[in-house]
Image (cartoon, rainbow, N blue to C red; front, top):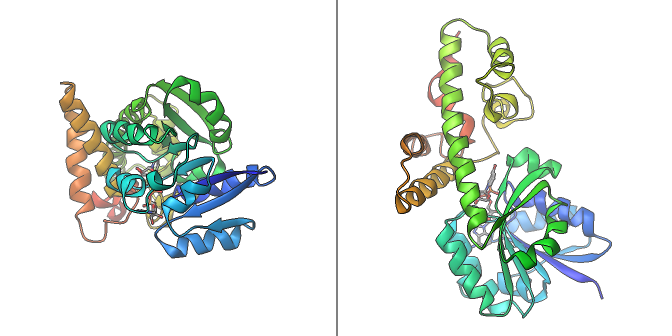
Length: 305
Ligand code: NAD
Protein backbone atom coordinates (compact mmCIF):
# COMPACT_ATOMS: atom_id res chain seq x y z
CA UNK A 1 0.00 0.00 0.00
CA UNK A 2 1.22 3.49 -0.84
CA UNK A 3 2.08 5.69 2.14
CA UNK A 4 0.45 9.10 2.40
CA UNK A 5 1.95 12.55 2.66
CA UNK A 6 -0.19 15.32 4.18
CA UNK A 7 0.35 19.06 3.71
CA UNK A 8 -1.47 21.82 5.61
CA UNK A 9 -0.95 25.50 4.72
CA UNK A 10 -0.73 26.33 1.02
CA UNK A 11 0.32 29.97 1.09
CA UNK A 12 3.22 31.80 -0.56
CA UNK A 13 5.64 29.15 0.69
CA UNK A 14 3.54 26.07 1.36
CA UNK A 15 1.99 25.96 -2.11
CA UNK A 16 5.23 25.64 -4.11
CA UNK A 17 6.80 23.41 -1.43
CA UNK A 18 3.85 21.02 -1.60
CA UNK A 19 4.01 21.10 -5.39
CA UNK A 20 7.69 20.08 -5.41
CA UNK A 21 7.13 17.40 -2.79
CA UNK A 22 4.18 15.95 -4.68
CA UNK A 23 6.06 16.01 -7.98
CA UNK A 24 8.98 14.06 -6.47
CA UNK A 25 6.83 11.50 -4.66
CA UNK A 26 3.82 10.99 -6.89
CA UNK A 27 4.84 7.47 -7.86
CA UNK A 28 5.45 6.35 -4.29
CA UNK A 29 3.01 8.29 -2.12
CA UNK A 30 -0.55 9.51 -1.97
CA UNK A 31 -0.92 13.24 -1.28
CA UNK A 32 -3.60 14.94 0.82
CA UNK A 33 -3.87 18.67 1.61
CA UNK A 34 -5.78 21.19 3.70
CA UNK A 35 -5.94 24.98 3.90
CA UNK A 36 -8.74 27.06 5.38
CA UNK A 37 -8.64 29.16 2.23
CA UNK A 38 -10.75 27.06 -0.15
CA UNK A 39 -9.31 28.80 -3.20
CA UNK A 40 -5.82 27.57 -2.37
CA UNK A 41 -6.96 23.95 -2.03
CA UNK A 42 -9.04 24.02 -5.20
CA UNK A 43 -6.16 25.53 -7.17
CA UNK A 44 -3.80 22.92 -5.80
CA UNK A 45 -5.90 19.84 -6.44
CA UNK A 46 -6.89 21.00 -9.92
CA UNK A 47 -3.32 21.70 -11.01
CA UNK A 48 -1.72 18.67 -9.31
CA UNK A 49 -3.50 15.57 -10.50
CA UNK A 50 -3.75 12.72 -8.05
CA UNK A 51 -3.89 14.99 -4.99
CA UNK A 52 -6.98 15.41 -2.85
CA UNK A 53 -8.22 17.88 -0.26
CA UNK A 54 -9.52 17.00 3.19
CA UNK A 55 -12.03 19.10 5.10
CA UNK A 56 -10.16 19.39 8.42
CA UNK A 57 -6.59 19.11 9.73
CA UNK A 58 -7.80 16.09 11.73
CA UNK A 59 -8.72 14.26 8.54
CA UNK A 60 -5.36 15.03 6.93
CA UNK A 61 -3.55 13.78 10.03
CA UNK A 62 -5.64 10.61 10.21
CA UNK A 63 -4.59 9.62 6.69
CA UNK A 64 -0.98 10.78 6.77
CA UNK A 65 2.16 8.81 7.51
CA UNK A 66 4.11 12.05 7.29
CA UNK A 67 2.46 15.45 7.67
CA UNK A 68 3.90 18.86 6.83
CA UNK A 69 2.51 22.17 8.11
CA UNK A 70 3.43 25.62 6.76
CA UNK A 71 1.40 28.25 8.62
CA UNK A 72 1.83 31.97 9.33
CA UNK A 73 2.57 32.11 13.09
CA UNK A 74 2.39 30.36 16.49
CA UNK A 75 -1.36 30.95 16.96
CA UNK A 76 -2.15 29.26 13.63
CA UNK A 77 0.10 26.31 14.48
CA UNK A 78 -1.66 25.91 17.84
CA UNK A 79 -5.07 26.13 16.14
CA UNK A 80 -4.18 23.57 13.48
CA UNK A 81 -2.61 21.08 15.92
CA UNK A 82 -4.50 21.66 19.17
CA UNK A 83 -7.82 23.18 18.03
CA UNK A 84 -11.03 21.24 17.52
CA UNK A 85 -10.80 19.04 14.43
CA UNK A 86 -7.06 19.56 14.76
CA UNK A 87 -4.09 17.35 13.97
CA UNK A 88 -3.92 15.95 17.53
CA UNK A 89 -7.39 14.49 17.12
CA UNK A 90 -6.34 12.61 14.00
CA UNK A 91 -2.73 11.50 14.45
CA UNK A 92 -2.09 7.84 15.00
CA UNK A 93 0.98 6.33 16.70
CA UNK A 94 4.02 6.67 14.48
CA UNK A 95 2.73 9.59 12.40
CA UNK A 96 5.56 12.02 11.69
CA UNK A 97 4.61 15.72 11.93
CA UNK A 98 6.97 18.30 10.44
CA UNK A 99 6.19 21.95 11.12
CA UNK A 100 7.99 24.24 8.67
CA UNK A 101 6.37 27.48 9.94
CA UNK A 102 8.50 30.05 11.76
CA UNK A 103 7.21 30.17 15.34
CA UNK A 104 8.55 30.74 18.86
CA UNK A 105 10.69 28.08 20.49
CA UNK A 106 8.30 27.53 23.40
CA UNK A 107 5.28 26.84 21.19
CA UNK A 108 7.38 24.47 19.05
CA UNK A 109 8.35 22.53 22.20
CA UNK A 110 4.79 22.52 23.64
CA UNK A 111 3.24 21.25 20.43
CA UNK A 112 5.98 18.61 20.15
CA UNK A 113 5.11 17.36 23.66
CA UNK A 114 1.44 17.11 22.77
CA UNK A 115 2.23 15.23 19.57
CA UNK A 116 4.53 12.85 21.46
CA UNK A 117 1.74 12.18 23.97
CA UNK A 118 -0.10 10.57 21.02
CA UNK A 119 2.94 8.35 20.32
CA UNK A 120 3.53 10.37 17.19
CA UNK A 121 6.70 12.27 16.29
CA UNK A 122 7.29 16.02 15.86
CA UNK A 123 10.04 17.95 14.12
CA UNK A 124 10.45 21.70 13.76
CA UNK A 125 11.90 22.40 10.34
CA UNK A 126 11.59 26.10 9.52
CA UNK A 127 13.01 27.27 6.22
CA UNK A 128 15.05 30.03 4.71
CA UNK A 129 15.37 31.14 1.10
CA UNK A 130 12.10 32.91 0.37
CA UNK A 131 9.52 32.21 -2.30
CA UNK A 132 12.02 31.81 -5.18
CA UNK A 133 13.79 29.02 -3.25
CA UNK A 134 10.43 27.45 -2.36
CA UNK A 135 9.57 27.39 -6.07
CA UNK A 136 12.97 26.11 -7.17
CA UNK A 137 13.24 23.51 -4.41
CA UNK A 138 16.40 25.09 -3.02
CA UNK A 139 15.31 26.00 0.51
CA UNK A 140 17.50 25.65 3.59
CA UNK A 141 15.87 23.62 6.40
CA UNK A 142 16.86 23.97 10.06
CA UNK A 143 15.68 20.95 11.98
CA UNK A 144 15.02 20.54 15.70
CA UNK A 145 13.96 17.00 16.66
CA UNK A 146 15.02 13.79 18.35
CA UNK A 147 18.13 12.82 16.35
CA UNK A 148 16.75 9.34 15.69
CA UNK A 149 14.01 10.91 13.55
CA UNK A 150 16.19 13.15 11.44
CA UNK A 151 17.54 10.81 8.75
CA UNK A 152 14.12 9.44 7.82
CA UNK A 153 12.65 12.89 7.29
CA UNK A 154 15.71 14.37 5.59
CA UNK A 155 14.98 12.61 2.29
CA UNK A 156 11.59 14.36 2.09
CA UNK A 157 13.04 17.75 3.00
CA UNK A 158 15.64 17.31 0.25
CA UNK A 159 12.83 17.22 -2.30
CA UNK A 160 11.95 20.80 -1.29
CA UNK A 161 15.36 22.11 -0.35
CA UNK A 162 19.05 21.81 -1.01
CA UNK A 163 20.50 22.32 2.49
CA UNK A 164 19.16 20.42 5.48
CA UNK A 165 20.78 21.10 8.88
CA UNK A 166 20.22 19.14 12.06
CA UNK A 167 20.33 21.67 14.92
CA UNK A 168 19.51 19.62 18.04
CA UNK A 169 16.46 18.89 20.20
CA UNK A 170 12.95 20.23 19.44
CA UNK A 171 12.92 24.02 19.21
CA UNK A 172 16.52 24.43 18.04
CA UNK A 173 15.44 24.61 14.38
CA UNK A 174 13.33 27.61 15.35
CA UNK A 175 16.23 29.12 17.28
CA UNK A 176 18.44 28.95 14.17
CA UNK A 177 15.69 30.42 12.01
CA UNK A 178 15.08 33.33 14.37
CA UNK A 179 18.79 34.14 14.33
CA UNK A 180 18.87 34.03 10.53
CA UNK A 181 15.86 36.26 10.17
CA UNK A 182 17.09 38.83 12.66
CA UNK A 183 20.22 39.09 10.52
CA UNK A 184 18.08 39.27 7.35
CA UNK A 185 15.77 41.99 8.74
CA UNK A 186 18.70 44.12 9.85
CA UNK A 187 20.47 43.64 6.47
CA UNK A 188 17.35 44.47 4.43
CA UNK A 189 16.87 47.73 6.32
CA UNK A 190 20.57 48.50 5.93
CA UNK A 191 20.59 47.71 2.21
CA UNK A 192 17.45 49.82 1.67
CA UNK A 193 18.97 52.80 3.46
CA UNK A 194 22.14 52.29 1.42
CA UNK A 195 20.38 52.36 -1.97
CA UNK A 196 18.22 55.26 -0.90
CA UNK A 197 21.35 57.21 0.06
CA UNK A 198 23.35 56.16 -3.01
CA UNK A 199 20.61 57.11 -5.46
CA UNK A 200 20.13 60.47 -3.75
CA UNK A 201 23.85 61.05 -4.15
CA UNK A 202 23.47 60.50 -7.90
CA UNK A 203 24.60 56.88 -8.32
CA UNK A 204 22.84 54.57 -10.80
CA UNK A 205 21.21 51.59 -9.03
CA UNK A 206 22.76 49.01 -11.43
CA UNK A 207 26.25 50.36 -10.87
CA UNK A 208 25.87 50.66 -7.10
CA UNK A 209 24.51 47.11 -7.02
CA UNK A 210 27.52 45.79 -8.97
CA UNK A 211 29.93 47.60 -6.70
CA UNK A 212 28.27 46.37 -3.51
CA UNK A 213 28.21 42.81 -4.80
CA UNK A 214 31.92 42.80 -5.54
CA UNK A 215 32.71 44.64 -2.30
CA UNK A 216 32.32 44.13 1.42
CA UNK A 217 28.76 45.50 1.58
CA UNK A 218 27.32 42.49 -0.26
CA UNK A 219 24.39 40.60 1.30
CA UNK A 220 21.49 38.37 0.21
CA UNK A 221 19.42 41.56 -0.06
CA UNK A 222 21.83 42.93 -2.69
CA UNK A 223 22.90 39.83 -4.62
CA UNK A 224 19.75 37.69 -4.68
CA UNK A 225 16.64 39.49 -3.49
CA UNK A 226 17.30 42.90 -5.05
CA UNK A 227 15.18 45.58 -3.42
CA UNK A 228 15.27 48.27 -6.14
CA UNK A 229 12.58 47.64 -8.81
CA UNK A 230 14.02 46.49 -12.14
CA UNK A 231 17.38 45.14 -10.95
CA UNK A 232 16.09 41.57 -11.05
CA UNK A 233 12.79 40.81 -12.84
CA UNK A 234 12.07 37.76 -10.66
CA UNK A 235 11.86 39.31 -7.20
CA UNK A 236 8.95 41.11 -5.46
CA UNK A 237 10.61 44.54 -5.86
CA UNK A 238 10.03 44.25 -9.63
CA UNK A 239 6.40 43.18 -9.13
CA UNK A 240 5.16 46.18 -7.13
CA UNK A 241 6.58 44.44 -4.01
CA UNK A 242 3.85 41.79 -4.29
CA UNK A 243 4.29 38.16 -3.18
CA UNK A 244 7.37 37.11 -1.26
CA UNK A 245 7.75 37.54 2.50
CA UNK A 246 5.23 39.93 4.03
CA UNK A 247 6.31 42.89 6.20
CA UNK A 248 4.12 41.66 9.05
CA UNK A 249 5.81 38.23 8.94
CA UNK A 250 9.20 39.94 9.20
CA UNK A 251 7.90 42.07 12.10
CA UNK A 252 6.72 38.83 13.73
CA UNK A 253 10.11 37.11 13.30
CA UNK A 254 12.01 40.09 14.67
CA UNK A 255 9.61 40.11 17.62
CA UNK A 256 10.42 36.42 18.20
CA UNK A 257 14.14 37.21 18.12
CA UNK A 258 13.79 40.17 20.48
CA UNK A 259 11.74 38.24 23.03
CA UNK A 260 14.06 35.22 22.84
CA UNK A 261 16.99 37.62 23.36
CA UNK A 262 15.28 39.09 26.43
CA UNK A 263 14.88 35.61 27.88
CA UNK A 264 18.56 34.77 27.55
CA UNK A 265 19.79 38.33 28.31
CA UNK A 266 21.34 38.91 24.89
CA UNK A 267 21.39 42.51 23.69
CA UNK A 268 19.93 43.06 20.23
CA UNK A 269 19.88 46.81 19.61
CA UNK A 270 19.71 46.63 15.83
CA UNK A 271 17.28 43.71 15.97
CA UNK A 272 14.95 45.83 18.12
CA UNK A 273 15.30 48.84 15.82
CA UNK A 274 14.48 46.69 12.78
CA UNK A 275 11.46 45.24 14.62
CA UNK A 276 10.13 48.73 15.38
CA UNK A 277 10.64 49.83 11.78
CA UNK A 278 8.86 46.78 10.32
CA UNK A 279 5.95 47.26 12.73
CA UNK A 280 5.58 50.87 11.58
CA UNK A 281 5.78 49.86 7.91
CA UNK A 282 3.24 47.04 8.43
CA UNK A 283 0.89 49.64 9.92
CA UNK A 284 1.32 52.12 7.04
CA UNK A 285 -1.61 52.19 4.63
CA UNK A 286 -0.80 50.40 1.38
CA UNK A 287 2.16 48.54 2.87
CA UNK A 288 0.49 45.90 5.07
CA UNK A 289 0.57 43.17 2.42
CA UNK A 290 3.82 44.06 0.70
CA UNK A 291 7.06 42.10 0.62
CA UNK A 292 9.63 43.00 3.29
CA UNK A 293 11.93 44.57 0.65
CA UNK A 294 9.39 47.42 0.45
CA UNK A 295 11.48 49.34 3.01
CA UNK A 296 13.14 51.01 -0.01
CA UNK A 297 9.78 52.37 -1.23
CA UNK A 298 8.79 53.35 2.32
CA UNK A 299 11.97 55.44 2.56
CA UNK A 300 10.96 57.24 -0.65
CA UNK A 301 13.65 55.56 -2.78
CA UNK A 302 11.49 55.23 -5.89
CA UNK A 303 10.79 58.96 -6.02
CA UNK A 304 14.41 59.84 -6.68
CA UNK A 305 15.48 61.00 -10.10
P1 NAD B 1 1.09 32.81 3.96
O1 NAD B 1 0.30 33.70 4.85
O2 NAD B 1 1.27 33.14 2.52
O3 NAD B 1 0.49 31.31 4.00
C1 NAD B 1 -0.08 30.71 5.13
C2 NAD B 1 -1.18 29.75 4.69
O4 NAD B 1 -1.72 29.13 5.86
C3 NAD B 1 -2.34 30.44 3.96
O5 NAD B 1 -2.65 29.74 2.78
C4 NAD B 1 -3.47 30.37 4.98
O6 NAD B 1 -4.75 30.28 4.37
C5 NAD B 1 -3.12 29.10 5.73
N1 NAD B 1 -3.73 29.05 7.06
C6 NAD B 1 -3.76 29.99 8.02
N2 NAD B 1 -4.43 29.54 9.09
C7 NAD B 1 -4.83 28.30 8.80
C8 NAD B 1 -5.57 27.32 9.51
N3 NAD B 1 -6.04 27.55 10.75
N4 NAD B 1 -5.83 26.14 8.91
C9 NAD B 1 -5.35 25.90 7.67
N5 NAD B 1 -4.64 26.78 6.94
C10 NAD B 1 -4.38 27.97 7.51
O7 NAD B 1 2.52 32.66 4.67
P2 NAD B 1 3.89 32.20 3.99
O8 NAD B 1 4.57 33.37 3.40
O9 NAD B 1 3.66 30.97 3.18
O10 NAD B 1 4.72 31.81 5.31
C11 NAD B 1 4.45 30.63 6.05
C12 NAD B 1 5.51 30.51 7.14
O11 NAD B 1 6.81 30.42 6.55
C13 NAD B 1 5.54 31.69 8.12
O12 NAD B 1 5.77 31.22 9.42
C14 NAD B 1 6.71 32.51 7.62
O13 NAD B 1 7.32 33.27 8.66
C15 NAD B 1 7.64 31.44 7.08
N6 NAD B 1 8.54 31.84 6.00
C16 NAD B 1 8.10 32.62 4.97
C17 NAD B 1 8.98 33.00 3.97
C18 NAD B 1 8.53 33.86 2.80
O14 NAD B 1 9.41 34.34 2.06
N7 NAD B 1 7.23 34.06 2.59
C19 NAD B 1 10.32 32.57 4.01
C20 NAD B 1 10.73 31.75 5.03
C21 NAD B 1 9.83 31.39 6.03
